[in-house]
Amino acid sequence: MAYVNFARNCTEQLRQKVTDELWVLSVFEHGSFTILRCQWSKHSESSAPSKSTIPRIIKKIETTGSVADLPRSGRPHFATCETNINIVRASLEASPQNSTRRLSQELKIPRTSIQRMLKDLGYKPHIPKLINVLHEDDWDKMMEFCEKMLEMIKICIIINKIKEDEFFKQF
Image (tube, rainbow, N blue to C red):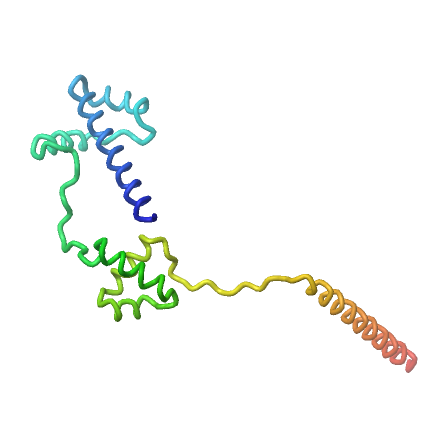
């Protein structure tokens, strides 16, 4: 479910970016940068694009035919494919107490990839602790404890008072 929400958010951001850039192109074709900045507030809540952004958008459309970003360079994440995500999910359902290191060793998947998958699946990086709950008879025990403590305090006050009296009688 977390992956679906992530994908929806990414799609929404991409849709908004494309909408904004196409709007900029349509307005810029019919006017100047000053007109574009004035009309931007009617179109979007964000700040208007800078003067250098407009030529970049136009150049990107002319060269690639789209305003979408080019694929990122670098090594792709092969370990986080749908098959491995399902394997990790099944392993966690079978033994949820396993750490990411143990899962990594058992499944032969890098630990960082497992951490990324767990984050996408909505798992938290900690083990929840047991929380104490009060029961019906706990109130009676607490009242009994308080009464005993009050008696002990009264006794201590009386003893201290007697000691003070004896101390002052010496003078």
